[in-house]
Image (tube, rainbow, N blue to C red):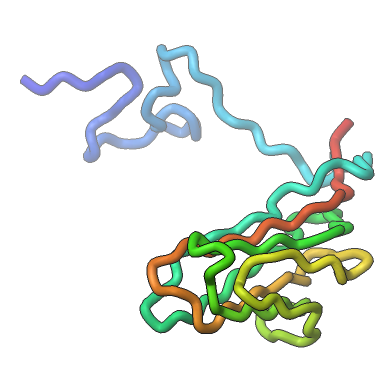
Length: 162
């Protein structure tokens, strides 16, 4: 005889009219459903908080070419970047070149800086960035297998419900 845990129903069972009745684990476990916050509740603005989400990393493929992108996401989010730091696991002995662009997700439009040796910082940053704008870093001649990383430092504005 097959025994089903409380709240978990067999695949062939009919769903009840309640939207939470058929979800595993909701009944008898003390768990509460996640209630989404409606967009109208985001009326406040947090200004000058540390920038989050400005990091990306990936392994360099065999071709030695790698492109990473970071940018603000979410309604009302505005980044004020101060500098971008690039690094590879080879370090200062790296012979790659990294080009940093500012543009939309689909095109590299404005060259912000060039970093030789694939490691270093770029301080010539845009005044602000809104969703849809990204910082695109393109390495060429990087050592295959290296881990390349991008870190954007600065502050940001974000919407809040409080």
